[in-house]
Amino acid sequence: MKRVLNASALESAGIEFSEQVVTLEELKRESPQARILAQYLIDFKHVISHERWEELDHQDKDHLSATERDHIVIPEKLPKEKSHPYRYQGFIDRYDIRRCEANFDLASRIKKKADDIRSKDEDRWTEVIKDCVFERLREQARKEEGATYNRRAVNALKRFRVESDHIWYFGREVLKEYCQQTHFELTAPKPDLYLSFHAYLQGDAECGPLSADDYIENFSVTRLSQLYEEYPELARKLARRDRIPQFGFTSSPCKKFYDVGSFKDRACFPWAVCEWKHHGKIGTCVEDFLYCQAANAAAVCLTLFANAAAGGRSTPVLDDIRPVVCMTFTGPKSKVWVAYVTEVEAGRRYKYRMRCIWEGDLRVVLDNVKLCVIIENLHFWAMNYLRPWLSSCVDQWRRSIAEMEDVESESAESDSSLNYSLRRAATLDDFLNQEDEDDVDSDIDEDDADYDNDEDYVDGDDDGDDGDDDGDDSDNGDDDDDEQDHDEKKVCEVCGSVY
Image (cartoon, rainbow, N blue to C red):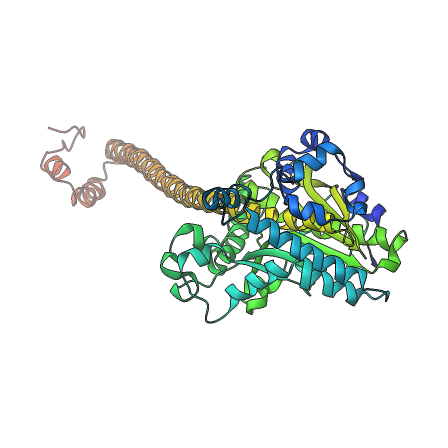
């Protein structure tokens, strides 16, 4: 069957998206977790200094309302360091001026790079997005990846990945299993760039002195692979008892992850995906295809989150499933989306939705400042809120699997004890029945013996064949003392009576 990717195919699989920028109130009604994240991502309070604001072109300022301007611009001017050193330092700390300045400088550089692109070539925009927009996160991830990086506990807790060029074939199969049933075969996602957590190899070499701590070990290749492998085995054993949770544990959309592949493959739980096309595709069907690519990849990530939230139980709590962030770029046209699960249908199948929460232009400095803030906030949320939540999900899966193992062990022992007791009862019953039969047979033998003796007596009366009668009684009395006493009695030769 030919694989497809379009809005109709996605909708048939329960995946939908909307280009219109959604309000926080509307988002709250659909997904409280998505609303919480969106509100944090687009928090632009005091992100640009008063002095930098004055440097901006009128074109950047004119589309802002007075309320929005007052919100994003620091209301005070920077005090003179020499004249007011204490006030200057307090101002720097209160408004995080260093962060504001760094974001403004990067935003200006992004604008310059975007303005210089004339060729309708996707590679041109790849350079801008990878080398400028995500420059700081990529540098931090590569630094932590380095062989000479100091392996301390604090560094292990900060590990994340910025990757590309992975085709999520396995992720497509996972999505197919849990999305709405459809006759369409979706293509495998291949994000232009995605952010995820790093899966450790166990030991001090990579994780530092806290390598045995659950918070770190929950993101180890060994533990994540064990949970992935143990559940199906237990599910098969418990199938006949109807005690199987509906959702399996999967931490990576790449199959090689579970084979302890190379460093490149040790990325787990992707939490942001990015897709882009060159500016020549603005307003075309290719731009719609771009959104379909992002929604397809987001649905795979959400399936991993939702299954993790199930924790080995019958179904995940819908409001507990964390969202995923998507970013799309059609040339300079940028959009930020949040994707979330809207429904758990029939106890097993998911429905997904991706909504746009912000849009901007890479050729506008102020928009680039906001985009830098969004990426910073996204990274902070992932490391300080998403990661602990996923760790708790891993803990819950471990507890559930341990409980399933106990149930299986107890059931096996119960079955064994039941079969043993049934076998003993049958054997005892057979023994008792056999004993009763032996008693009956013994009674019948005694009655037959008495009957035979009576016949002998009668024969003695009728025929007077004393020799044969004495001989018969002698044979019958060889094994019984009472019958020997009987032989010592005398029989009248005339009437045959015993005296």
